[in-house]
Figure 1: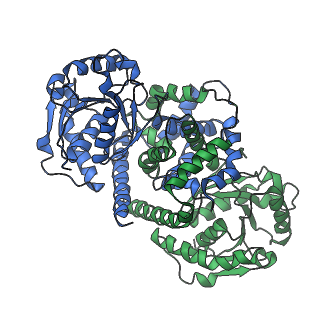
Figure 2 (figure 1 turned 180 degrees about the vertical axis):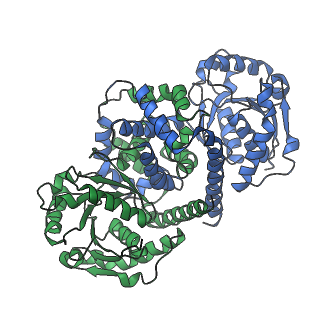
Figure 3 (figure 1 turned 45 degrees about the vertical axis):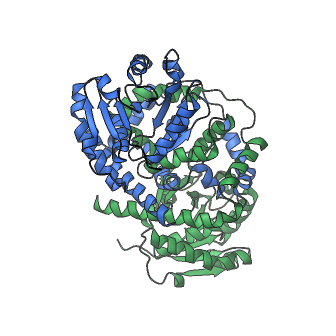
Length: 315
Length: 315
């Protein structure tokens, strides 16, 4: 099958929007980028240059002529009129998204997929009244998608099954790891998985069991290395010769006991916890070094990804 | 400071015991390995060969003469009589550990540190009545410690502060990442962090939101790559220009809402969930391939570790 060259409209040109633009453009597709803020649009070129360089570090083959395939648009219609897929990555505000999707419903061409990057707002809350609501669905990436392929796809109850299948298939073609959620679960899955771990870290820190830096060390120098290679369920499946069944027969009661624990109903992320975390994190890293640390992070993630991908080819 | 060559006794020669033996022997220390089961003792040499090879893949410099520094002992006294540090890694059974620590209390030389690899049994439950209980503490590693450096150190209320400090310092010298828990918290921290994520995965699978394989994909191809580089708190600290304070002001309510959720008090890891997980995992990986997959995992983790360590040296 010859892969078709698509036109993808990126609506909202911040970090996520530019990262999505990189994912589609490096795979050979045309990308039309829109932002209502001229200042944001001005920074797109600098962001894309950096993300393309990180893509190369991560081992992505870049199809030639990438820059000629990317266009910038100060008006929405110009960006979306010919798009086969529109990826919205604007602010996390349901009113803003509702207004924008009404415009997309009107401006997009017949058959265009209308996707939102929202991390937590169910599609059904801002597309119910649209004429083409069967073409709307959530495509929420791990951040940023040009280095982290995990992406959750969450249809609304009215999303056309063919639209879901085509979206999953296109995402796979450009190298993402899309995962279909079978229900519009509150918070979806990606944020909930991170949330579960963060909540436990907050509780341990608040209870005075461990410092923030030490909690990070346990994950980074322990599970992080393992989970970059194997998911947590695959990991416990290898922890007993009889697999996950034997493992859960032996240790399931530990998870049950933890799942049954009662916690105080007071706020967890309260001002005193936030103040404590700010103090601890600022001692580790001054605010003015945050941007440099982000580049450091992205380069290292890119290298890990390249190493794992290159090993996939020889395994 | 010239580093002192220690004698370390490994009590219990299964996977964890042999992995600990590798950690100490590759750093130049003498290691005396005991197991009550002659069959287990016979497999030690094969295990060490594999773990030493993985240590090399992970970039560990191996001090020469490693094999000559390791001795096998069919009786406990022979292994522990001259040990500076005893690391117990026998079955997770409080009665077995209580009996063993009574013997260690009697057989070990003055000043020896008596450490347990238990993942969840508080030290105070099996050392209270010992003459030398101030030398006892928990040193619980991520599994296996020769590739994953994260290690939690959990003193009992009566553990001597100097013993704690010396243990932390020795672990750092041999390349582990030890973390001190300030309290004997139920389940400690390492297992609780993994448990929090697994419990959320179990709940999403049981609610029919996602399959086991897809839940693994979201972690492996998303957070895993990130958390191998940065802990989860460091990671959210970089997600806002104002750091974790700004991030939590913006998104803290999401974690609060999730932390306040009420769950049914019925068993989570019940027979139907276990049967479902077994079915899904066995479709992915037949039981007879578990051992091969473990080698694959350990080689890949070793390579990631080497890459991250080599970059540490140039950053």
